[in-house]
Each structure stands twice: as structure tokens, then as C-alpha cells.
Length: 287
Ligand SMILES: [Zn+2]
Image 1 (cartoon, rainbow, N blue to C red):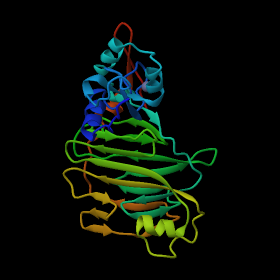
Image 2 (cartoon, rainbow, N blue to C red):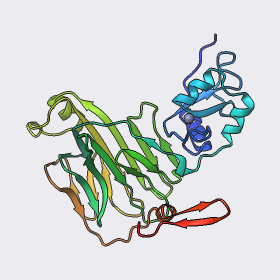
Image 3 (tube, rainbow, N blue to C red):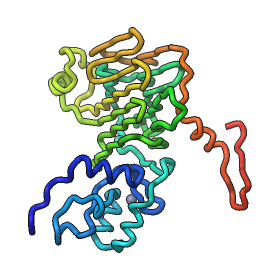
Image 4 (cartoon, helix red, strand yellow):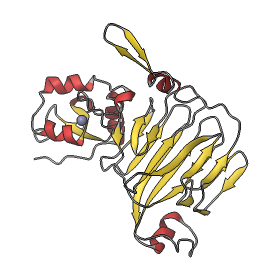
């Protein structure tokens, strides 16, 4: 068997975009995608030609490897662009304690890490079993759909320019046309030294953390503004912060600009009505 080369980044991008960033098998839509070679099968002719490849979730990739689908079916799946509403997935990172690193600053036991104009951009909630669940609400100046993660469940993605979600489910990166950007990464930090090295923080700030601890790193930017939370620090209309440690606070960063944020207009509306057979529209008032 000839040796197969790794799949070029560009090919992966084509395959992810083609299926709308979610597994194209009917009623699936899982956003954690892998890449399947089928036409010709890679054990017969090694190739990385996107025309004979398809992005599938891990489960349906296994089925495809077991010849569950014909080539005709796979080619048809390739044309089945998943609607953003169907791209849902539970984020697999459920932990009792999370240390969040937002824009290079550390937040510990801080339910609302970042709030902008009353929107909880990054927040955490303990569920009834004591696990911390993450919520993220991307802001945008455009009236377009943006990522919404509600208590670890991925509810919305919109139409990103690119969405990167390695199958291990530990990382997520979404880029939109206007410069809106979100990056999430979960990792285990084994001790204080590990924490200092990974996040470039000064010693003795982490005495209260119970190592090993799960860290969720969150960076984002809002297109058309100078709001940027990157690993370099936080920049937002004259506010800048770097490597600070915020612990046991209700709200970490609370910024008020009086901007009328426009993201997710339709999505909210769609939650309020559903179209029943016979074109009957059922509206849920008061939600
Ligand atoms: Zn699938």
C-alpha cells in the first residue's frame, strides 16, 4: 500500500464548508468532523482529492468505513449542506471546577467572566450535580447569527467563514466575514508550574487552585470595534488588562458602551413560532 499524506488544511476547509460545518448524514449535524476518503477508497488509491472525500462525524465515519453507504449516497451527502440550526452538539467538557482564562486573564469561581452592555458573553453555571457549565454568547454589530453556547450545549453557529472543531472536542475556533471571532480551548493543567508556563502568569497567584485543574481558554474579537480578548490581553475602548487574576467575583469584566448589539435576530424569533403541517403557525407568546 502506498503511503498516504496528511490532508492539507485547504482540503479540510473545503470539506467542512461544503457540508455547512456539521455532519451531513440525515438528522445528525454533529459539528465535530472527521474526513473520509471514498472515491476511490484510500486503501486502493491514496489521495486527498476533495471531490472523493467527505466530512463526517466520528460515528458516521465509522459507518462509512464499514461500507454502510454507497458512493452515490456519499456524493449526495456532500451536497447536503446542513442548516446552521441543525449543527448542535454537546460540548463534552464537564468539570466540577474550571479555571477560565479569558483574554489572558484568569478567572476562578467567577460566574460571569465577561459582561458587555448587559450581555453575558462568557458565563458559568453550576448544575444540580455540581458541574460547571459554560455559556458563550457572541456579540456582533451585524444582524447575523453568531455562536450561542448554552450551558455546554451548542445551540447556534450562523454562517462562519471557517469553523474548526477537531474531533477530540477540546477546541473550537470560528471566524466570520466581518472579523467576529471566537476561540475556545479546554486543557488540563497539572500543577502551578504548568499553569505559569502555559499562561505566562506570575508565581503565587494560584495557591487556592486545586490541581490538576481544567482550564478553559476563551478569546474573542468583535468586528468593527476594537474589542479584542486575545492571549496577549484584553483591549476594549481604552480598557486594557493583562495577566490579572480575578477570583470569587460575581462579574469579572463588566463593560458598558451603550452599543446596540445586533446578533441573532432571526434565531430568537424562530424560537417563538413553529410552522405546523398545513402552514399553521404556532406562536409561543411570553417566552
Ligand atoms: Zn454524523
